[in-house]
Amino acid sequence: MLNPNWPKDQAMNKESWSDFEFCEANEQWYFLAKTIAEKEALEYVKMSSLKIVTICPSIIIGPLLQPTMNSSSLYLLSYLKDGLETLDSGTRSFVDVRDTAKALLLIYEKDEAEGRYICSSHDITTQDLAEKLKAMYPHCNYPKSFAGGMPSMDMNSEKLQTLGWKYRSLEESLVDAVKNYEERGDVAV
Image (tube, rainbow, N blue to C red):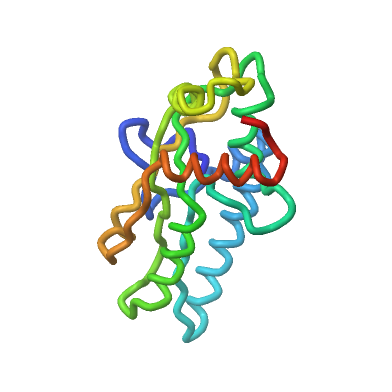
């Protein structure tokens, strides 16, 4: 979710939405499309007897099953090998693909599940993420500085956790993702 008007001291939650105008002005089409699709689905069920539950995951990382790299994995991979001069600063939220799958199953199995659920497990600044990866994989080509860019995104999965959702550590997700990227030939660590 992208919304520069959301209070900086408050994590995004089930009440948060991406700001249409901000997404359009900054050409954030992915965020805009996801927001429009979810709002349309919620409007549609108001006119029917259907029940809808939505899960809004943050940046999904972890091992890949598919042969092509998705945008979330490319985001993480850029930390390891692009050697960018400057990377956007701010906080980003991550969730492991396996924990996202568990959340989907949990929502499906719980009759009391309703409405929107944020699915995110770890908030970390882009600089702290780069430092964490550098400590684990010192020979990669990391960003050199961090400045400006997209607004921070802290996310709150409390509603999902009240249903019993649990998640793995960020370190486990990073190690498994990087190991998978290496096995696929996407990066040498």
